[in-house]
Image (cartoon, rainbow, N blue to C red; front, side, top):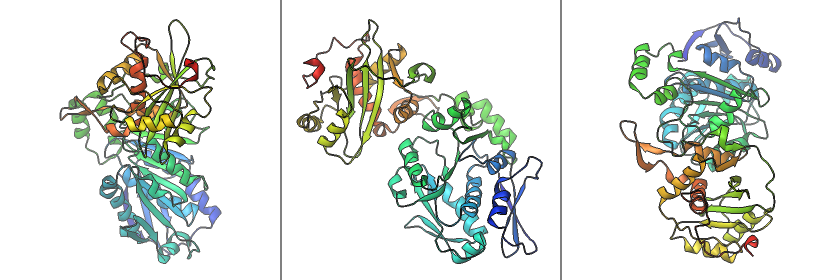
Length: 469
């Protein structure tokens, strides 16, 4: 765990910008693991990092994934990194984002305030607006003089990414972004806020599932493509923290299921218990993007919603042993049925066969039908039957997805059942209402994949589609 020791030192002027950049980034392996941060009043803070935190301090990459076991010193490191980034980048907006508001309040914010306010006295936090504003005295401490622009740290959570839309961030710290509630769409919203300044991101988390975080960063790093994409992955176990008891680490190793110990104490991605599509294999079921021939039959599975209307597009290969390829994903909100229908059909050579919605959502189907996209009512209403049909298609290696569909891939690899007190899967699907694309896949999969893998044994409701004419 990072510890902070404050000691008096003689007056040291702030470094100029070029020297500051070298101080912050030009490290060598032989340099002592103590990073001084200088202030005009002569106070020196010295940070004694464990070696993995130190690697993160030295990292020059834009994306830094600090993947650590429980209590390994991740969250306590975040404010220190963000502080240094502010000194390097200058006055402006910065982001601090947690998966949920309670987690932000309980863990991230207290660590931040302990460092920025209690130790350094740089400013004040406004609870109602969830922003931390650096004071004029704080500006002098950070930059050597008062600034024309304010420095504000916006606190947010992944369940409300719109709250960050007003900020133009210069850097971001994301804590516990590996949790299921931290969706890919939230990460993409943060990236939009950082795009103008090409802001850097520090991600401090334990691995929780095999979703977007693993696919966008861990897998890229493992594939040897991290340098090209400016990614640094730093993984370390709980006992990397010198304060973490060895006996507690040994107890967890001896008593916990192997997958849980590997993820939560060794910070290793592994397939957790309760995964619904546990047969989905990146190496088998993800295929490189290719152009779907126009004569292939096409289908849409759609899940309705005022904020989240989502769909998947499937093409059927015309062969004796048919293969099905998911080639497109759709997710949008705040549109009329006519606007959704136009966007769904756009770019398609003809109107695909479409199914979607629950049995009670007939009005949605009527609205889409009036807009020119007929939506069939799913014949299979049972959720588990629909899941089993899609599962069987993956298991038989009949269903594949293009490798550039990140939101669908994230849902497939994080879709899971709740666990009981003994860590065993229950029947209940965790956060079921958030998996809109998989609902769409289940609706269309119920028709495409029977027990024998075919779909001709069904008689779907007649809907408008040119290939049927």
